[in-house]
Length: 136
Image 1 (spheres, rainbow, N blue to C red):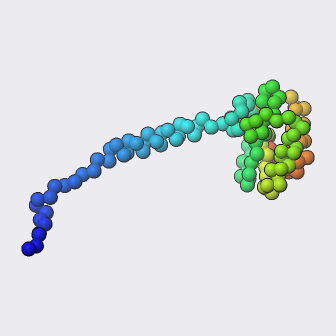
Image 2: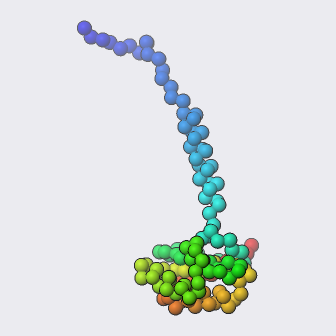
Image 3: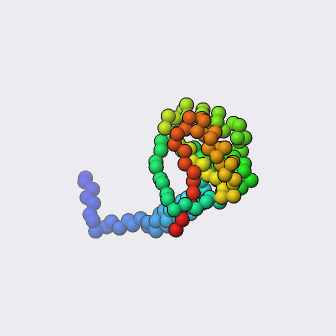
């Protein structure tokens, strides 16, 4: 004996998509808000203003920060000026196209900035930039 299925007896099955859509929107808002809180190297630095802005994508960027007290930071750790050259030199050996961004506070003396810049250049990095805020 054969069983025949008729379409008259079946009920329509609906899947409620509202909770799924709500969850996707909540995740989207969470990631947008959390992405806006990321800072450059997480060191609080008041950068100087500049009228000109360059953005050159590089293979690998290393950020060296100098805070308002003149402390140098590399990878979110304070580092002495005497060790900047050796730390950068080891990174140059790992990546040929290394570029360094110096993120200096506006109140840092020029001598401290130049001293750090010299150590980076002595390590063999030719692509060095100083981070600034774009003047509007």
